[in-house]
Image 1 (cartoon, helix red, strand yellow):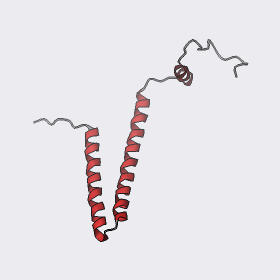
Image 2 (cartoon, one colour):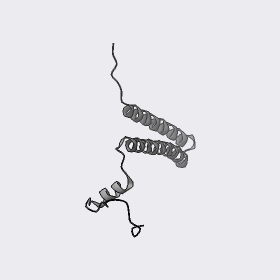
Image 3 (cartoon, one colour):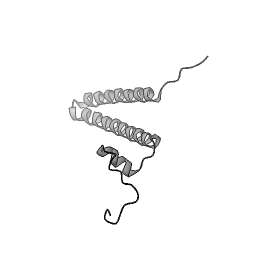
Image 4 (cartoon, one colour):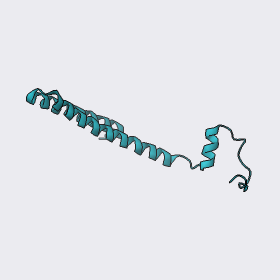
Length: 99
């Protein structure tokens, strides 16, 4: 019996949706405690801040890993590529006037 592999992205999405649902349940409970809307909003705000921070950290991690997987380029090559012109590549070391 073999099991199909589940992607980490799907698991993370399901976990975040579960946490969001759990936060909504707690927010409704906090509101029903004394019918103060601020209590529910505080609970939802804290859950949103937590999930937002988590998403931001996952994004930073994926960007870092993508940067590590990318071929190594020097700062000058990156600058030339950004400028869009490769005909200005200097030939040889910079002169004293260029420094």
